Length: 248
Ligand SMILES: COc1ccc(Cn2ccc3ccc(-c4cc(N)[nH]n4)cc32)cc1
Image 1 (spheres, protein in one colour):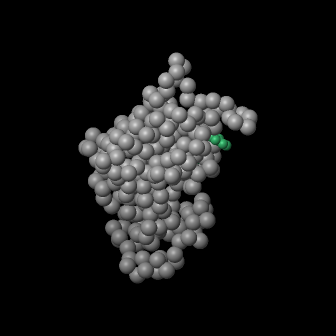
Image 2: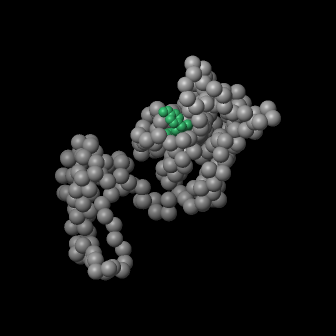
Image 3: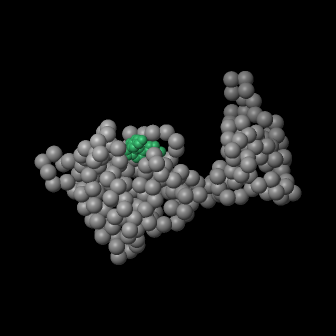
């Protein structure tokens, strides 16, 4: 997979050089290219923003630099694949595990994290006429720009790529992944030492009885989900639990 990111803060994307994504890049599983939007400005001050038509607070990102940047990037890979353009925005479609799975199947993602009040709408319209453009929100809170959402979305997508996670099973039982535990939150996890500050380990986890352990974990996940995300309980298929119980 190829990932391009266009930003006025390239240093904000440094975390893509470390950990899971950094290792995938080093192994050649990910081709990540970070671009400074100001490379496509031509004035002395490398201007990327201007006042909003119609008035109002803040500044809007000018269309010309984005147009030149995106033209250059999509043309650079035109022989290989068509890009999916991902626009982080507070007013976008909620980014979910389902969308992460969908994006993980794409050959090429181009992220356009903006700043200020966002990008001139005509940029989204122009590229939406020729490419798949996804305007995505990572949550119902307001950030100052799109770089943090890019880090979130790239990590969520990269960990799904074959061979990127050490244990291929690791994302099979993810929260929100398809399957019987589909929409349940993870339950509690424990490791050595067996006692820490007077706190022990639930006996069932030391029992070696895999069926009981699986049932305990499911019950704990259900309890935690009921407490923190009751909205997910409606989405969970009770029949899947019966099937899971029979397998235990
Ligand atoms: C209310 O309208 C606003 C418009 C822009 C901004 C600042 N800003 C500029 C680009 C940009 C990209 C993404 C996000 C963002 C995404 C999520 N889930 N929260 N915030 C914020 C962004 C703040 C508010």
